[in-house]
Image (cartoon, rainbow, N blue to C red; front, side):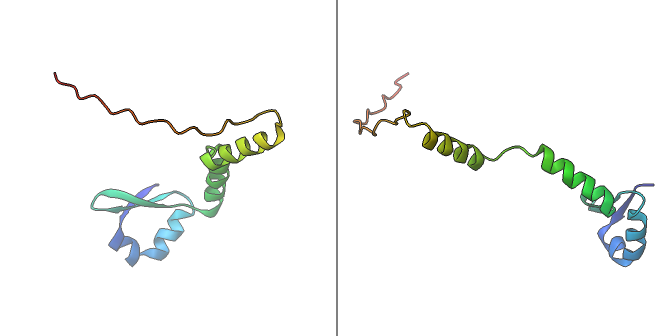
Amino acid sequence: MTMKWKISEAKAKFSELVAKGQTEPQIIVNRERPVAVLIDVQRFRRFEKLWQENERPKVRDFLREIREINEEEEDLKIPPRVNRENTPMLADDS
């Protein structure tokens, strides 16, 4: 049975917490708010694998891929940057 443990109780009964965590997740709370969960290693490995498989790509990975595509495409030329005069924002007089 999943139990909730106050931090002080979890410290005092750490061996029991770990033993119970082998069969069911054990929730550790601080002022009635969950702050951690103790789970067995097999469950953690399954979670870790799912997390890695479903992890969203990072922006840096997209940028790296764009850079690689750009290097492969010889006819893709990026025009040079042109400095433009800044246009002042008009104040809204309403």
